[in-house]
Length: 396
Picture 1: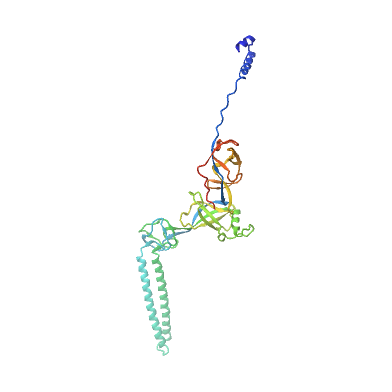
Picture 2: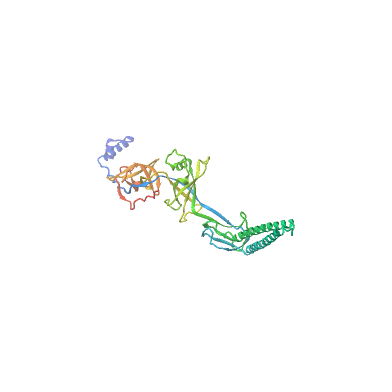
């Protein structure tokens, strides 16, 4: 090329332009290097699941014992013994504490003896009255003496009644030296130890322990007013019907603990607050659960599910099969030709690791659950089936 330029005697900018032209022309006869073919991406597919499901509402609530009783001492005295272990399940009527009964037993014995004394006095007064009643017609006694004997009988009868009442009171005090469980349930720890002096009284008595009734267990949660009206109007199935009592309707509800994936605990709604909160537009509802296995403990945060539709057939896909394009949700379906096809989908509620698809898929479709990042619409893929079929959460 330099020889040509020298022959043409070009120099300066004109020589540079000519050199560039000749270089471009020299490459025209050469073929471009072939590009490497892109490998076919490998993906994992799983079939769309078809299952009978039920639409439902879900809320967050808190468990609360159906009864909570503070066990207090009703009499004064020293604590003699503790008859339970902390955290035990106790039955109604079971002895929990014993207060030294010696003094109360002595008082009871004295009260019973007083009944005998007043009864003897009553018998004597009646005997005198009977004798004076025969003497009065003969005027062997005066009218005043006769009336005194009548009054003595009345006084003795009143003394007997008072003595019996006092004996009943002392018997109650003696009975209260044995502190028994007023309800069945889970007992807390003992708040006092043996040998301590306990104060008595209905409200000011020493707090000994607390018993929580776990059967049944209540769950309280808040719902919006539209949902409340829907639950109440299930009595006739007519949306224009007057609201009924939740307890009569037996609306089912299901409970999930924090470490559970499904809703295995079944109960029913039995209470709704008398008015809707004007500030929040919500009402408080209560579900009741038998809790036979005693897995529910008071004070837990739980999830409540209430079915709101009849069972129907639905299509479900794993959550990991879903992708997002701005606000559009879609999946990739592998067709018979082995190509990935994008399908925009409408989604429903979640069932464990699966999501209900209301529109966009058909039974038998194979959706990609692994390798989504390597797939483009219309691209040929090498599909292999997932090792395990997707598991459907338990339906209501």
